[in-house]
Image (cartoon, rainbow, N blue to C red; front, side):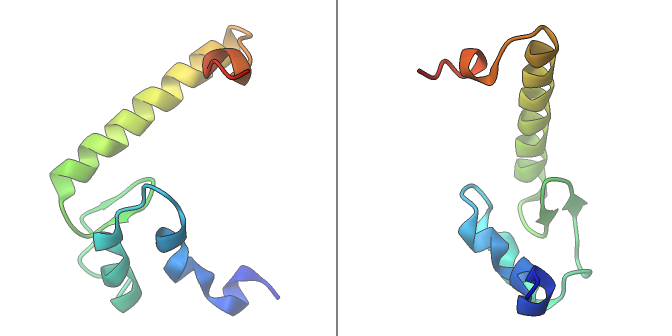
Length: 81
């Protein structure tokens, strides 16, 4: 069975660390209503706070991509090992 058949999409926020729980009930109730921002997840509450988180994620992603382009490995980037 696929993820769609199980309808797991609605509950993924509870299982992924860092996903704000205050956005989950709104998504479950009505996914397309009262959306304030779409990015790494759909935002229903605390718009300005989440906007800052999205910007932080974007900067981090840009930094990692630049370093990977410079042939740094993920082990080097995250100092693992």
